[in-house]
Image 1 (cartoon, rainbow, N blue to C red):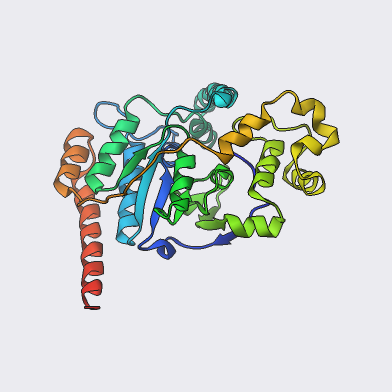
Image 2 (cartoon, helix red, strand yellow):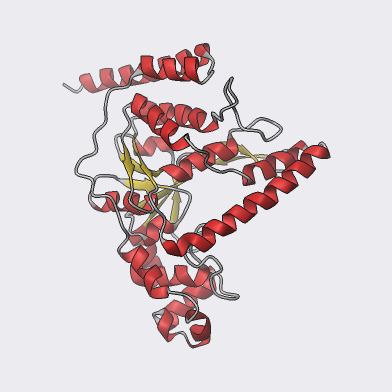
Length: 340
């Protein structure tokens, strides 16, 4: 579901080049789901190797990270750990959506409607056994560090922005802001030209950056109050939110009454959720204690062997892609040498 703060936050369009030399903490599951959902054939089926194993996530990680490294961006991926118990309802809701989408996908395929088939196929996206391990293997070949969070990955990513170890966190979800991220980048791992479903129209998806402090100042709220706004709208820990309360109404209520406990018209519903625990999850999330983020050398040979020999990628395409990365890094190195 994700938290709907789109109409409230202060957003600024930017480009990937703006993050050259900066460490960006990426919500790994969020990014991998994007790759699995979007990298598909015309019929909606994901890419796979000669043994039928899905490779869409590997393809996304390959090409996106080649782009990041070529631009001088320093990505670090943060993987989810055990979700808070309050997230159970949201997890079950997502499972049901996938089941419903599977039925619609099969009907669309039977009717020969490939446009709808692809749309519904994307909604069935889920992580399979082994995908996390495979993703970490690709990152290791790139020399890109990854972190295993004890709980929500976006919380540890947000934490890294506050320790100064990362410039910003990257995710499509706004929850990072409630977790205290100094900066959140959206459309970081999925920027580019995208087709609008059921229309022969394309749009350019560009990164946008949200600075939490600017948003709080513009809304005239504290972070604690913004968390209460989020609870009113609906978070992963109370996915249904409150009846007939959207982002603007939630903002108005908190600005008028300051906190959930003082809003008279929601008191009956408020008793049905553990809002104090939800507050605690966002205010004091369980995060990984990271001493140092270390980037390593790229293992070009290891990556070629794995992708080509084990996962059936085109050798010519992989060689071409990695040669492009080598040239970009060599050029950056030469430009840096000119300063000395």
